[in-house]
Length: 92
Image (cartoon, rainbow, N blue to C red; front, side):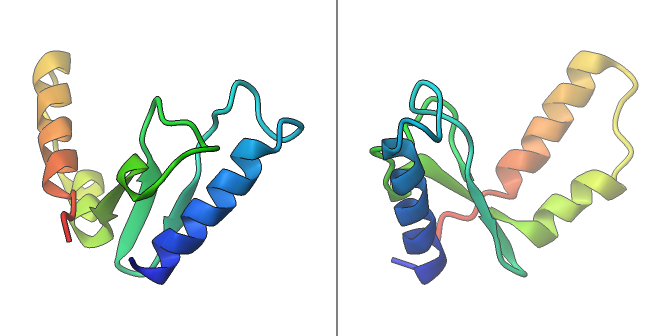
């Protein structure tokens, strides 16, 4: 397991288990390196989160979203942005 994700899991669990720090066991945590960002998935409890509770995204592929011109039609634009977000997922 990568050190950044290990530290993110430990920190997330620490705050998730501390009821004075969170409401309903939730919230969001993330970590950025120069190449990747790990983001907590929705619906996952911080107290019991593990590596599968985070999505690892390639920051260079995410940059496309800020540079691309999307459709003016909201449903088409949403589909295009989702496709770019999914393309940025790093499975490694």
